[in-house]
Image (cartoon, rainbow, N blue to C red; front, side, top):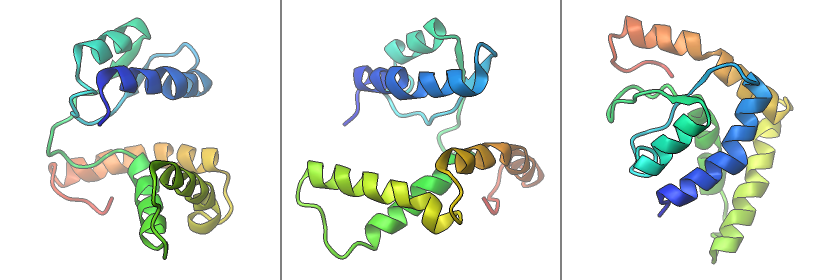
Length: 140
């Protein structure tokens, strides 16, 4: 299970460089769920120290996270495998291999960063759909 230390390492090693790449020094907002490692004192301190604003997120709120499209595609790819990994190392290799195939199989050979960019750019439509549905379910 992921703890706050591990989550902050992920934020340092992966999230922060990506935020810098896309936003530079401009303010940005980060969305996660309310998992305990996401709302810990350590993680909140990390957000403050790195100038990242965390969006409040209702535990049962509508899913507006654009990465969910990619997680769903990855989940379907893994579920479709005929052999199951026998170790964490095998699972990691399988996840990485299938992750690399997602743009080729799901998004018609669009580079992964472009896929992510398009998903993020679609957020205004998602937010509008949630507003129209008054927080209820949407097609997203």
